Image (spheres, rainbow, N blue to C red):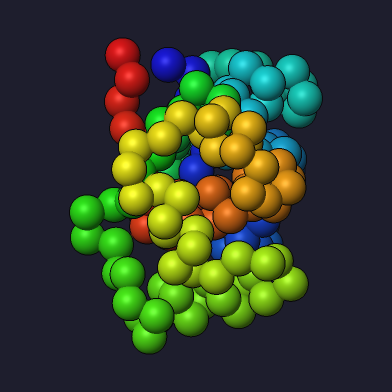
Length: 151
């Protein structure tokens, strides 16, 4: 499978030292869980071997993790250890982050209670597509939902 970044790259850019490589900063600004390494290479002008080196460096230092890009074929399910109660810190953080979105943590977790293709969730239109992407990425980054292998 293709690879992309799974961590909050905007926060990752703020977490690197002031004297960080401009190339690294360019990569961090462009990286999202929606883009493959190839797409990042094209967008930033950074050669693929350097993308791989920078990704290995960031993963080694726990600045981000490498994940397959989010696509309609991605299959997600709630992580078996995900906190489900409304008073859990994850629920409180989610509700604060998505206070303007008409979905609560418990509703979001119900979307992923059984393995679902992301494309099926999009077509169900329980949320506007952009908001569903944001919710899914937020939960995925915090390892509350996990992508299941499909091949």
